[in-house]
Image (cartoon, rainbow, N blue to C red):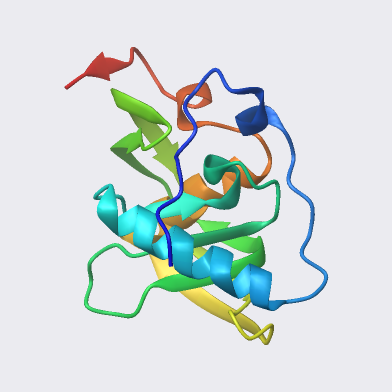
Length: 153
């Protein structure tokens, strides 16, 4: 495992749409491991592949709820319900925060790290994290969705 460099807002990679992963190879497994290590080393709760310069549809997340890190390959949010507003930040936009409106509950369809399909329900903080990371895969940053002004730490 190795720490990857997190690219910052202004790098055009963050604004590009990611490609689907067609095969879960050893190289993808290594990327997953590196992303999890990088996320933890930077005190993040989620990290999408474009944030480490890889335009593939993959993210990892851990909202510190005691479960194993979530790995989502080719994720799709297939349903969403309710509304919650909370303050978000991003490892690619360091030191900036803003209030974003997200669904309260979602259903996620994705492949796990072995390439097996799964669906899961998420609510609250995990739903926010999944939406935030899925946006990264489409070249969307949380700053695009902030209601009101961004603020600094």
